[in-house]
Image (cartoon, rainbow, N blue to C red; front, side, top):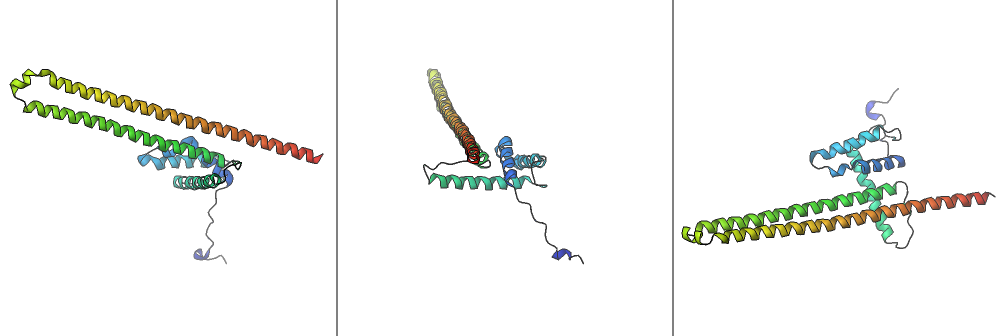
Length: 223
């Protein structure tokens, strides 16, 4: 006699395999769904899920964008905890696994994204400040001109022009200052990216060398 529906064993949810996690992290790095704001965010995560489900190497049969997002957060949190633990063990050689390497790369990418957002907001705030300062000065000039008698206004036609020039010079200075800061930020960002790429290359080569050494030792042990 088959069990009643309410007593039947619920279908077990399939866990992510090691390979699933690796594929997921690499696809998130490729698509960068976190870069899209507004209502498009979940659409991009859904797209990542669709790509993963289309891969024969991915073991899960169903997957939602929200699940991909949550799994990514979980994997990155684990990577952060591992980094914190390793930081307390300075001098200890660290080897990145096949899953840890893309997790580290994604952490770096997301850190750069957050950094870029901060710079963009700072630039927008400074532009707004320049516009506000210029607008306030122009308003003051207009009020002063309205308050001056017609005769006096005719006697000093260059006064307002000088103030307008001052506003222009101030705005130009602020623009140049903003451009210089942006150039400095971009240079620092490029340096960080170059260093991280170099570190990953060195780490990968070290892993290859270690694997070769293990293989050589295994061959010698059999002789």
